[in-house]
Every structure is written in structure tokens, then in C-alpha cells.
Image (cartoon, rainbow, N blue to C red; front, top):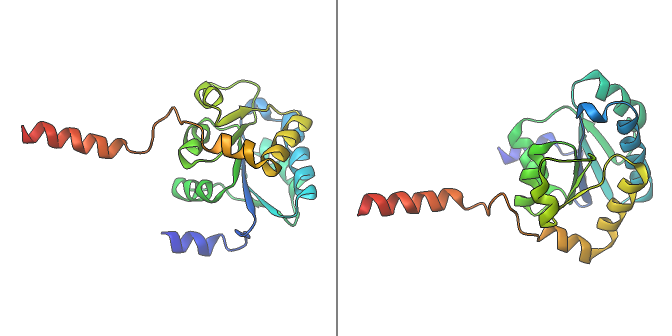
Length: 186
């Protein structure tokens, strides 16, 4: 599987810092998504040592705005929505993640990836409390400020990427197997 993924995404320069961006929430349609796109454009123009990868949701309310602002930019890759294994693989290769998607907010910390949440509120408060995620909303200046901080401040990046993940430590299956072995060997 990994070989196919690499072959499919060989247009991404993985020697650079990868920023994975997802945004599709209804509350971000319109002006909020425009603000997100303007922030991403500013970041892409400022930092030439990054690649921004944006799997663009199929909804025209998302696609029309995203393609209007971000199409045909050298270090911004607008791609079709990803299958789950590809998304997880790309998260693992990313330096940081910008998202309004709840599932990614839960999964990225398990991969040690800081998450900037493109919402004004989140139901995934655990990542905010743990310090592996930060609520930045859709204000252009806030997004730019927090992305720049993570790209330039190694201490801040390390603090967010090493924060304790409240969704688990990735060893649940091993623990379950041990419990089952203990039960059945008694």
C-alpha cells in the first residue's frame, strides 16, 4: 500500500514541511472559508520551504471558494478527497495540521502532529486542554499568527507535538490481547 501512496503523491516535496489542510464544515462556508484561504495563501507566499496539501471536499460551497483562492499556486496542492488510509498516511507525513474536521482532531495527536482547529468551538476539547491542539477559528490573522509560530518556534512546536493524547496511546490492541490471554490462560 505504501508504494502506491508514494507513487500517487510524488508531486509533493516531502523534503519540505507539509501542512495538511482540511475544511468543509457548514459553519465555515462563505466568508470564514475565504478567510482560511487568504490565510493559507499568505502562509504559502511567506514560507517557500513548506507544501500545503488540501484534499478539497466535493461540496460546491467549498470547492468554488477554495479553487478561486488557492488554485495554481506552486506550494499549494489541491487534491481530491482521500480514502482513509491515504489520509492517515498523509497525516503521518505532515508537520502540522489545519482542520475543522473532528475525526482528524482526534487522530492527529496520536501521530504527534499539532492541530490548529479552524472553528470557533470544538466538541474535541480534550486536545485543547492537553495542549496538542489549539482553537484558532477562521480569523485570517489568528490563523497566520499560529501557523507562523509553529513553523518558526521549535519549542512551541515540540510542546504541542509531545503533549499527552487523551484519546489513547496507540496500544489498545496490545492491552486487549494481554487481557484476553490472561483471561483464557487462567
